[in-house]
Length: 125
Image 1 (tube, rainbow, N blue to C red):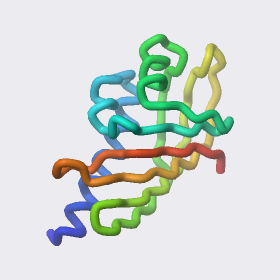
Image 2 (cartoon, one colour):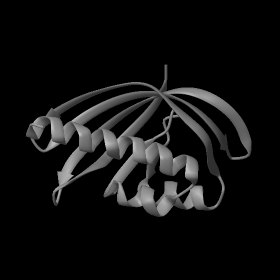
Image 3 (tube, rainbow, N blue to C red):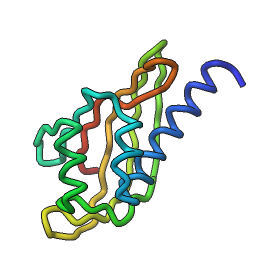
Image 4 (tube, rainbow, N blue to C red):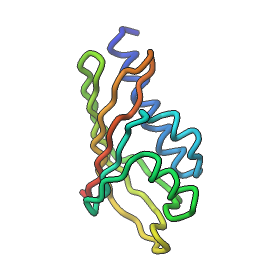
């Protein structure tokens, strides 16, 4: 496997591990997959720092029941990468449960030999 193929495989593994950790409600695993300064911009436009999002997950304000991957594209450029993934997520957000077709636009950075997500923006598709 070439270095580029290895990078791509590691980034996709991180992305899919994030989706799994969200559904499992495992904020410890999720925290390890994200940079310290990770931020999430929700489909509402709300900008949320990593620690706030994880705290809301732990408090049950964000409960992810399922996240089905529909498509993913990935561009790697040296120590940075850009991923666009489309998922259908079943989630309870602030007490209201619904299914949303979400497009996650994510940036990754190579940090101490590991690919970590540094930013995610969720929009509908």
